[in-house]
Image (cartoon, rainbow, N blue to C red; front, side):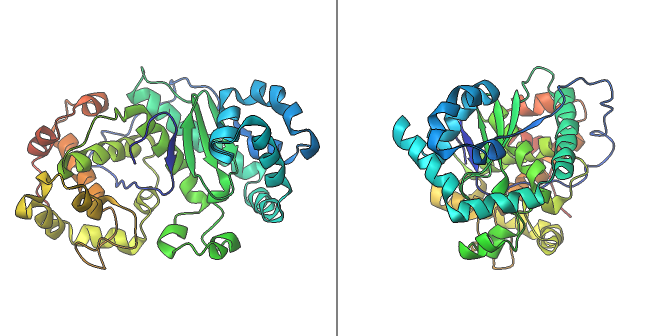
Length: 339
């Protein structure tokens, strides 16, 4: 999950519930951000004359900046040399399935829907700037299609969104690809803004410092999730984590037992990557606990710890939280004790 420069998220990972008190209810009317215009690289790509792909390079680079090259040579055709990549782009555009994919995207992402997404992102960017006035926001927000490979990318000061990965759980392409239900449930338009903000937040705060035990993993993601709560306070828990409502209820009902599981046998301080993966990886459930336990459960608990920490330490700002790298300190001062 931890990557540099180009950060790719195949699946959403986040959960947030409403926090106690009004700490994250902030006024942003006076916060200034650039109006969010979602550039439609997907439409511009499929409008090209495929016999003249190379001739579009200059105008596309003027519009999309360095992200255009990143898209062509890093996302759509990784590792290809220039001429071969252009031929591959033409083949991509002319492919029957990709044309149908593009038609599906256009059917769902109408002008009205794109305007809704833009408005939600602008509101989230205002909240981000309120809490982190010194941190950059994307210079461009670009919608693209990559043939069902990437959800969200951050590269070249651009936030990119793969719209074909948000066509609805019952989309025929997802069935054709035989993707499991735990994955397709998250491939809906309701997840787009949440995933995009998650991508930008992790791109901003991931220092790529080594994480050497389970507790550090839990707190790292807990901090990211708390940021999500701050920038998208009205987004439902299930959208942020990619759980069903039943899975959220399970976490709430068994939070005490789940915490007890992690405190047994010094699990919090284990640095075995295989064991850590059991609690942080995507899947239908967390097999190390039970088939009823949702996946990525360590991230859920980590977020609960961070929420408790922020609720009990009111003088700690969101910026202070993100600068704190001592996971044990956060755990201790959180006084986390689920009932």
